[in-house]
Length: 223
Image (cartoon, rainbow, N blue to C red; front, side, top):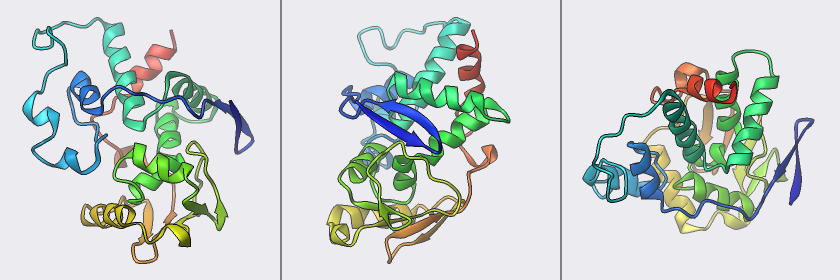
């Protein structure tokens, strides 16, 4: 177990623990694309395109969820999108709840500011899980210093770049080109040829996915 210091806040992160459930199965469980499989999610091979119902023998049966069930499913969906375990997600929520402002907005901004997520948005991985591996393999620099902690919180003005020794990796180059073709978020400033980018500011809620209902998570944890 490793103690991670994030801007004067201490988290405990289980480095080796990870979700081994098949990624396409996770998307089917939530009933929408979570973009967990990289380029496959943008093709007709995506499992949601073929079987848009939950996995299992009773998956095609309609189930009416209780209010708690709806809140739980939304929490699970967000947790799966960002690739967090339950304890990691709860720690992020506690930090968001302790900050000024709207807790739900704070939570999404924290999740979007994680190094593994920023690396994914910059194209340093075809998916968040792949970007997390790039971070852990010491392939990225933050403001010129090596950082290999996926949960490291990026702040406005930070520069994230690929280390010189990792720039020849073909898979990394292909991921950056694909991200460039889909356009980068407005809160990032990218130098594709230089394999680096600047995190200009935390994204506003209006810039993020409208399919996420973070207020349900707040209701769930407020009980």
